[in-house]
Amino acid sequence: MSRLLSEQEYRKTKAFKVKRWYRGDKDPYIGRVELRPQKPFEEDVNTQKKRIHDEAILQRNIYDIEHNRKLMMFSKFYKVISVLFVFTLIGILLYMVSYLPPVGNAANPDNNEVATKYIEDAMKDTGAVNIVTGMILDYRAFDTLGESNVLFIATCTVLILLRVDSRSKKKEEEENDRLYEPKNDIILQKVAFFLVPMIIIFGIYVILNGHLSPGGGFSGGAIIGSGLILYVNAFGFQKIERFFTQRTYKWICFVALLFYCLAKTYSFYCGAHHLETGIPLGTPGDILSSGLILPLNICVGMVVACTMYAFYAMFRKGGF
Amino acid sequence: MGGNLLANYGEAVAMILFGIGFSNLLLQKNLIKKIIGLNIMDTATYLFLAEKGYIAGRAAPIVVDNVTSVEAYINPVPSGLVLTGIVVSVSVTALMLSLTIRLYRRYHTLDMDEISTMLKKEDQ
Image (cartoon, rainbow over all chains, first blue to last red; front, side):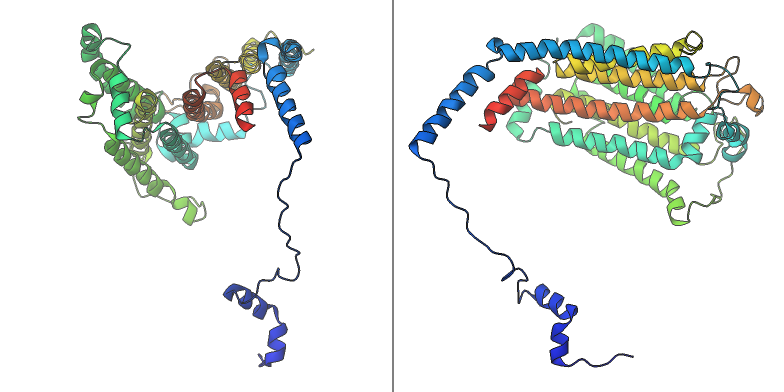
């Protein structure tokens, strides 16, 4: 049961103090903390002279790398110590390796029930023939979402660090872009003309067969990205901007990551229970099988391909 | 000294590579070479993980002819870990290189010592 407080009692409670502090009526520090203005920095002539003299010595003797004997001693000492340290490290690690169980032995402790479970159940549970893909895109798909986001965030950070702001500087950068290499190299262009479509088709093949054969989103995406980089090198940025600009990059990454999030974060909301997706797993070995793994592979591949190209474009001319 | 050093020669090579990368990190003054050293250390880790997952006489973990017994395939867990490691190392390398470019634009040198000297001079 609540009771009415009198005005006097209410003034003593903490709620009243908090309310008063929130309204700004009373600063709780007034009267408690002694405030004293800082003394202005005063320096008499002698100390000032001494300070300037010391700074001059500092400049002359310590930061003069070529003639500083102590620094030279230190750098030699540092080299010897670091070589010794590295050799000790290698020695300790090799000593440790000599006690590890022999490589290739099936009875090693790392081939435990986790690996057994994945090998025995992966095809039945996920429908993927490639057990590693089934592992990283179905059992551990949430980790892979984190990885794709790591790539995306790395691109964002590189963009923040390397972006060229003003328009005039951007133009200058674009003019200097091909200063040290031949413009429209005919050999490179002919080679790229044949090679780029094949590289990109191979990348698409690797992505689409991620659940059937070695490869998957990351490797296929890297292949497509390298194809795009070859295209840029041969034909220049003006040609590639007909179909790939910053807008394209933004939308591809956004759509791919959003689809991935929507497809795989349901475990967040239903307490990581095993939830049926309702998508049939299909016959293992077919292209259209294994549920969500194929679309997720395509998403990851698109993010990786765009990221690789974006890194290159930003390192080369600070934006694309 | 245990007796498995010769049997584990792949892991031994990984350790030596790790040491080479680490010495690059310590001894090189050029920032780009330091980043290369870090990448060599990454590679050593991948080699070590791949060696841990290998089992002699077994195939890569891709199901062939519906055989899903443990005796047929190697351990798939280290392969997944290597995949994760590669992605993270790509991101970290790109980040470090872009920071290096920023440093070069500001100080016009890649030498670590010169950069720190200039920083000290700026502080005064």
